[in-house]
Length: 346
Image 1 (cartoon, rainbow, N blue to C red):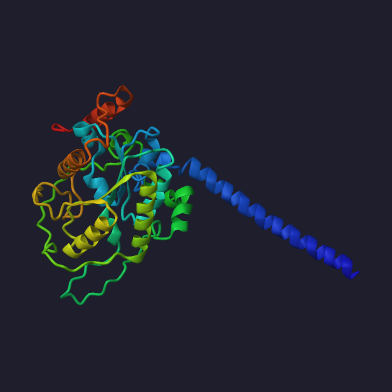
Image 2: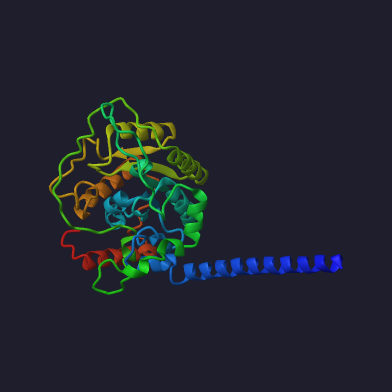
């Protein structure tokens, strides 16, 4: 009798386990289906949403990109791939989203390298201190981490899951979807990840850039994924460059020193536009807000400077492809960029 009860118990347990496994499998299949269709990375680039720039790389032709630029909104506001193409014939793509972290950038880099073989990776150094308050020697404020936005955090596993099952990142964006041809935010793949904005907001110089010997240490999570990024680039033979766009509210000389030390110890280039002598910021015309993000006019200056630096420092690293027929679609993208954004002087 007891033997029959045991068999019945085993059978019930087996049935329960099968139901749980079946539910999980169905749930995963639904997530996969939604992530590949309605909430796919490709759709994210077609509709107006906060990940439109970050996933633009999915539309790039395989093995066509010379430079991959990773960072947060500072980067997609200041680095214009089509301007770099026009001046130097270099192909590039920006992979950036608001408040993007180093760990998320590393996750995106591992993905894009499956289809691209770039010569250079540009990292926006500003995201290293994402969520960290500015502190000074005479300041009583503590260095506290600010709350992390739910869809972006510093956990590699979470980043990988969200990057694969994009429904977790894009599920709420249906409220703002737009494919109105008159909406300049819709279907802007020709921007190659750049966020176009001609709005002008007058601002004032950064008061935190007085010289100091102090060094602002990296948050531990940023350091971990910076080291991973350096190792990945070295394994692929990719040159690494760190840059800081002019940031009038979130940057200091102590942070500059921290990034400079890291770049020197890892044989990486570093351009900090907050400290250059041969670059002049126009505080009346180069920003679209109160010193957080550059506008198109400022982005042209930043991009041209980076292109000139690369050409002078590594003259044989990247080929000028402007006369290469295989890349003629970049000229088409340039014309779309000019027409759709109503640009009189490119």
